[in-house]
Length: 225
Image (cartoon, rainbow, N blue to C red; front, side, top):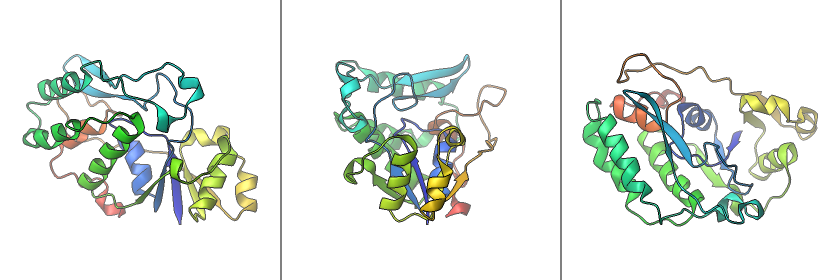
């Protein structure tokens, strides 16, 4: 059974989703510390002037003593309206713009925790893109550890025999420990596809909304399932 593990991500890019689609189980890693300026609470959309960051504001007081599942969204800022307005304004000519109301509905509930927001939206994207991998929240597994040891323990906890790592895993995974536990380590060296996109030259690694709104067939991942 192939397992992949990654922190929550807001409007995740296609490489994130491809790792999930290439695995049997995805562990949603909400039991580690929040990193500022990461992709956990922000991602990009494409505009006529280039990429635009959309960032979910969070309450940072005491965040170094908290794990991701405890990080709160700062709803004193009117971020939902701003994000939706930015998406609507820049994708009005996109092929699947008529589906914008379904995307807008994701922002209706008042979700106080960042990890819950990312988790709820992830379920939407997986359904929309036909990705059927099982998703497990690390915060519900009662597993401890750091870096390579944490990854190994999570793989064993969910019964994996293969771990599909991102390319950065080459810098910290202790593969000999995985081998001793009977777990094979593979690396996900993602080759980004091109697809119809607005505003000139193709820009890779946008948030998933860019692909979803530009490609109404949304069949990129279905062949993996």
